[in-house]
Image 1 (tube, one colour):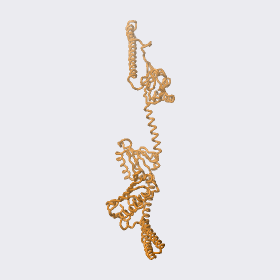
Image 2 (spheres, one colour):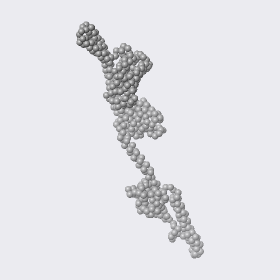
Image 3 (cartoon, one colour):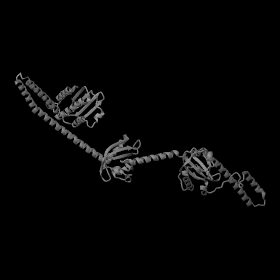
Image 4 (tube, one colour):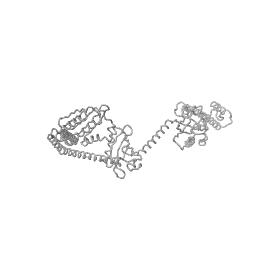
Length: 544
């Protein structure tokens, strides 16, 4: 919006225009015709040529008057149209002030037309934008600027209106003026500023992401973040416009990654681990996440994130290897312990058991030879015999705990029946047992593992469950062995299950895992605990 006519009037040539009022050089049409007649009769002494010249001059002046009348009518029609028909803001400035403004222009500025007509245009411009508006208006009037410009206008209510404007030279009532065309673009400016803010936020987010973020259009790189240099060693400008082939080891890998597009047709985001290659030729392992831009892949626009997980995968593999070694060591130690327990149990049974049996027989024979009147000696011998019997029973319990001989000689089913009976006898907790089939023949080491799992489970019930009933189910099929132990105790909690020092539960899991099996332990407060052991099994009894 130009500030004043004085700012640009020197650049607009003055023009003349006929007026029907107060113009001493213009006559009415009827007066002109009368003058023609008077000129013809006035001076008889004039030559014919002089009369013709005077008549032509009169005709010329009549023609000019008619043209001025038509121009005035056209001008009035144009401004009437600008007022009622055109939905854009139109105004005219003359002598540095508003001379004409239509309804839309006044609405855009936030004032009534009465408040605007006769005022200086610059007074409606935000103070911070005034110099810019003056400079742009001057350039546009000189023909040095062709595009529109934007500025802020202060409305009557104090609100700011964003205006887009162009100005051109024109005439108004026969004199030089400026014609302005404006549109209110407040919403567009706000939307643009919001978009700019979003782009700034997006750029900040991309810069803050440590991983490589790459935008693709038809497998060509259109944008990257700073993370590409960290992950791949490439600078941003080195990748723009390039194919993603340079990020992969081989052509085959590159073609495999093309499968992301088909997967993105069905889902918005996909992820996978995939080997990639750095600029220096180093191979790395990346977690690749791809998302399509928009609702479809019509333009094949996607965003891919590459996270370098090489060190994490290396640590993971080392941890898995270490864990496997520990499990193998645990299995080995269990095997060694079982063998050692079996050896000690055998020696206790064979050596110490035999000695105690011999001692018991000697004491019985000695008691028979003591005279009946030696009451004290007889009582002492009887007491010694009972003590030896107790020692033998204790010895039997010890070596049966170490390694029940029936497990080796009678099989798993018999050993479990004995264990259930011993548990009920020692704890007073009712134990119901179901075994299908009644006799189970499997690998000796697997039998030992299942027996020890049951033994540890029953020990935990006796120590912690506060149960009155236990139910044990052992079932063997062609492919699996399933052991299920239920009690009606207080129920194990999640906190107890996750304790790092629950060595009994850890032992149960590790024994099952060593045979490729699984263990599920769940509890319900006041309703008891369920332990389910599932071990895959083949006819030969070997681990799968």
